[in-house]
Image (cartoon, rainbow, N blue to C red; front, side, top):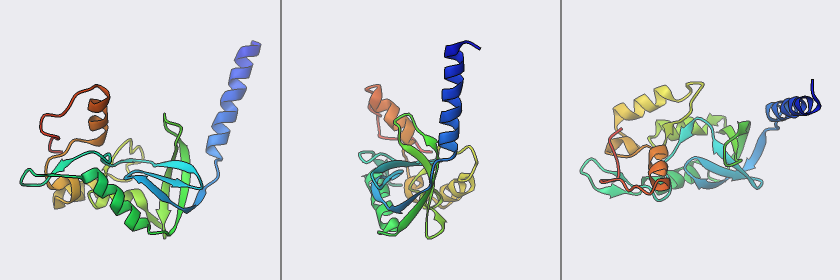
Length: 171
C-alpha cells in the first residue's frame, strides 16, 4: 500500500469509528426550527424528518396561506417545553450538524412531528415514519390539510431563485 493510500484508509477508519461511537447528547434543547434543535451548543438535525422552513407558507383547505414553518417550530418548542432531550447521533449532514434520533420522556420527537402533520419523512432509511405520515395524510392534519410544497423542494426553489406560483403543491 502506498503511503497516501494507507493514510487515507487510516483516516477513513478513524472517521467511521468516531461517528459510530459518538456519545449520546443529553440536555435541554433550544429549538432552531421544526427539525433542528441545539443542545449544549451542538446543532442537531432530527434524522428521518423534514419540517417546513420558518418562512415557508402552506395553504388551508380554502387556499389561505398560513405560516406552517413557524408553527412547526413553535409546536416543537412547546412539545419539548424545557424537558431533557436524549439524542443518539447517527452522523453529520452536509452542513456539519449532528444527525440524530431524539427522544423526550422516552417518546421519539421525529415521530411526534410527523404524526402531528408538522413534518414529513425525509431520508427515512429505517422507515420509522412512513405509517405516521400516512396517518397524518388520511387525517388531513397540519401541512396535510391543504396544499404545501415539500420542504426540500421549497429550499431548492429558493436556492435556484425560483418562486412557486401559488406557494405549494398538494402532497
